[in-house]
Image (tube, rainbow, N blue to C red; front, side):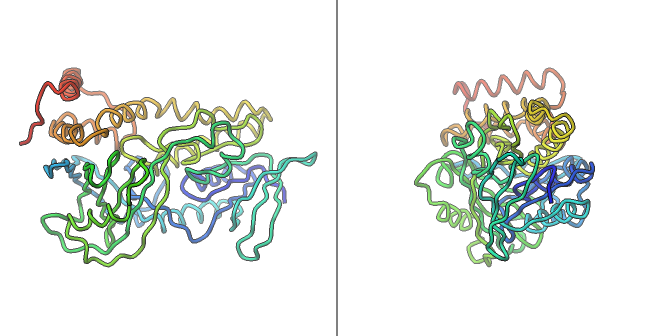
Length: 393
């Protein structure tokens, strides 16, 4: 069978692209490696749930408070007024998205991508079938690479696809304890401490009957398992049963090119669409899959390779400013424990709290009273220039 589009990767981005194209009447193949669960905190905003019609049973917890913990152990509790942070288990969430794509007409394939070949008959994806181990060769008009931060499709086909920087993330899924002074099932804890991560953060993310405990770093030489063990010790979670251990790269910035100008387009982590500072990826992966499907439809209708550029243009128009702001914040505050201490102190400001979570839930920079922006800007400048000491209430 010849396909209009062949999607490599069945995570949130690939499954979204495959579903959108199948709904539009295109012949779509979706290749995924069965049995792999991506390490992920699992946080999703209400906008994702609404935009992508996610059923309530997949949201295993609704977080109403975020605790920011500084290197000296001081903390700020940020209560989410009028909203929540949803939590999903990637094992079930990703499987649902793949099944929904298949229900709408995408052809699911189980195996591993090997390479792309081209001849007079067109573009062909060569992949290895998991069940038989046999090589298969499938013809398509377009390949969508949604195969993660170290995408084989990007490395082989896209200029700059080999050089994308990334953070290594590691987490352990454990059984939770009863609520106590250090842990609460309705609260996310984010730990900004150089002993845990010299350039990112650690976390406790409750998932109802489970908890994700993990950290990330871009620096070599950091023992991710030891850092996570220290996190568990800090919260009294050392004796909790460990259900799984997982690690994976998280990209740090969008690639400069998402297409090869011919027949390949990237989406999700493969395109680098993870939010700086927070590392949030699920919403942006699905948004990336959707714009990839939009660009793919334009390309398949017109035959113009230039239409593949639409995906990156739409995404950056919608989210580029947020990414720049978050990148600036990460560069400013994650470089040392002294800066991290100031960052957590700054989170005491009620305007900072309100704007942060309104932006998170709605996925856009929100309007506020002009003086609130002025006050935040002045406080931020004062901390970065060390004109004030960290304030603790």
